[in-house]
Length: 386
Ligand code: PLP
Image (cartoon, rainbow, N blue to C red):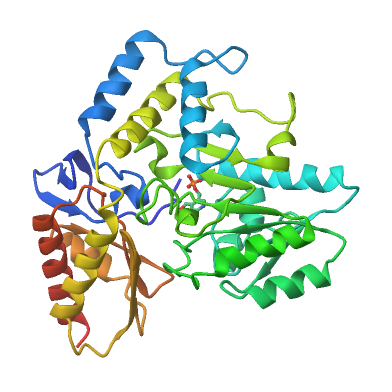
């Protein structure tokens, strides 16, 4: 179905941050499959894990014990501070699990029509629950009726959250928030934003649910972006880079949120199967045995400093924002055409929220590749916006 506006290129193979198309042309990948291939392409540890696992067992179903799923859950809990995990296959499904936890939590407190507060400009996925939570009317258009039970408030505005809690006092059960909005334009909130949301959740007995699908797995310089703050959410969703391209999603829970879903409440045929878990375990082991996460901030700074230097005085840059290797360069006008122009120059980038260049390179991007990225992109910027 024509659900995607595709670029006229097909990639045949990759290695690290490089990709080659079907004509043998080489590209630098500064998007990593939209924050998926954090370990780059054809990483030997992933290759080895899934090829070895496929020789043993790929799938049995969740009717039986799955040893690798338990091992992965334990490692994720150790790294995140969470308590248990439900596995699925994508980000939107991870958020569906979170939404079901919030609703059942509400019912356990006698709330018949539970409300989840989410944010304007947020993106949580395309299935109807996650879409209803999403704060972007463009992606929701044409799919009414969406689900009841969601209220959106401006991002990075704690007072707006307070007002929504007051306005729907007896019904609010949870707050769903991205630590940094990805699709919404790489919007980085004030440092205390998540702390204040945590406090509000504690004060009003709400679940704090953090969508780390784009920000997680080392992208921002911590394993999870909420770890820049000294907090623990009640629910945290993951997908994208968890399997470095092998589809796997996870909904992690802590404390009271961890005991809500019981046998028969939720499920997934493929969720957490041995093949997907072997990939995710290889991702975690690789991140733990390298400095890829701790070096993300310096690399992100190098990218931004390089572009700032080479575009000095360009009046069209509204702001350049980054945390680790999650980078947004906002323009004073729509700049979608840059994606195709960059591709012609052998560079993969993305534009989100119409006017923000988004860079999400693999965490293993090296200094030479960073120099190539900044030079190519800056040249493009100077050619098109002067
Ligand atoms: N949540 C966030 C923050 C995302 O960025 C995305 C995808 O871009 C999703 C959820 C949906 O993930 P998926 O496409 O795997 O369903």
